[in-house]
Amino acid sequence: EPGFVIWENADYAAILSNEPYMDGHTLVVPKHNYHNDVFELSDEVYFGLMAAVKEVGKLLKGVFKPDRLLVWVRGYEVAHVHVHLIPSHMDVDLVSAQAHKAEEGELKEVWEKIRRG
Image (cartoon, helix red, strand yellow):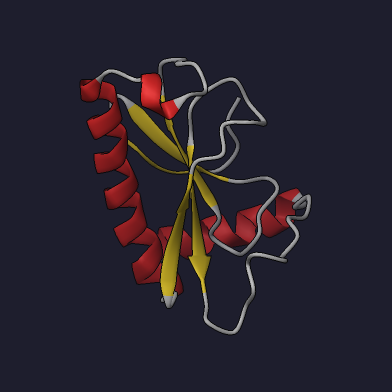
């Protein structure tokens, strides 16, 4: 069951990562279970996913004001395709950054910040 949903439509949802690298680290996922290789998706699902990523990215950029928004598809940890969106600031080295297991209260604070806009 997903935790903190920040955006959804009929086919895709965006949820806060429970192991974030930065505040606002979000996973965009299809609501239907697809394998974990994004390049094996049909064009319809792939482009729908990327449209959802773009919409959620605009939301995150508006709230967190990052210098850049990292788009990352790893495909290792879960057998369900998903895209990471990570707000990034020039003074933070995400290459050497470590994700951490977020407490529910921490995720709720970020979720509320996004809902307030």
